[in-house]
Length: 321
Image 1 (cartoon, rainbow, N blue to C red):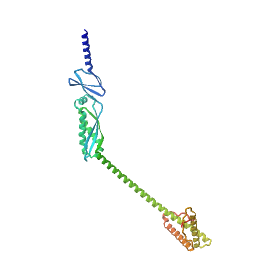
Image 2: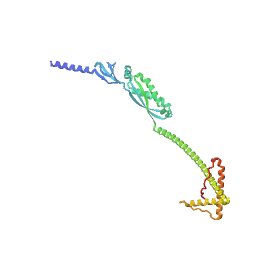
Image 3: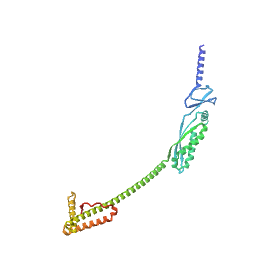
Image 4: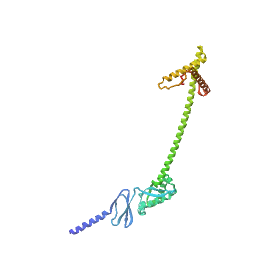
């Protein structure tokens, strides 16, 4: 009797284990393919699922999560430069029974299939582009890869979300040469801008110097005219006192001369001045001063049209000899 009970217990345990093997769970965003006697039976969704032990079996699973496949493609450009392009393909399997069955049964290695189409598309486009255009038209390359994959992989149950050209690496020697060309162009532009700035500075400085000299000449002419007017008034005052104009002129000029010498000698940084003080020498000095003043007055008269109105006469100013 005890032996029969043991046999029944063992049989019940085995039956429970068999039934338990028919219970399984499926994770979220995943589908499990269930086959019966080697033939597709159903697709088990997320959660708790049942199948008939021994008769049914779990053949495999398909995820609906977005996956990314990075592919490095080497190709030659139109100007015979080899470049490495890093292409990233983002894809997933839609949550439909048809897409799940196609993704599981129609492709053994979907990553390899996608890589083959990426290689074929890139190597059909890049050889028609110079190396500079490969960098500037990488979006065109990415779009062409996406369109090619989208048209092909849909029938295998895969949807292509996006394709990206993440990196473009030419040969190191070519990259260095491109950097040198770019640096040379920038140095050329900088030299051109510097030359233009130097030109502007030179022109501005020349205009400033010309204007300064023009104003300096006008100032000197006005100064000489003021001195002449002052001397004229002094001579007129002496004439009213009964002194002849010649004597008055010499007296005023000599007075100005002595005042100038006194001012120079009183300066802390005065220098040695060699001035003839004989009667003949003083006469010559007076004649030279008179001639210089008359010449300055004549120059002021000729330039009066450009110098504006004549300022009022002021007191005589000392002149250095």
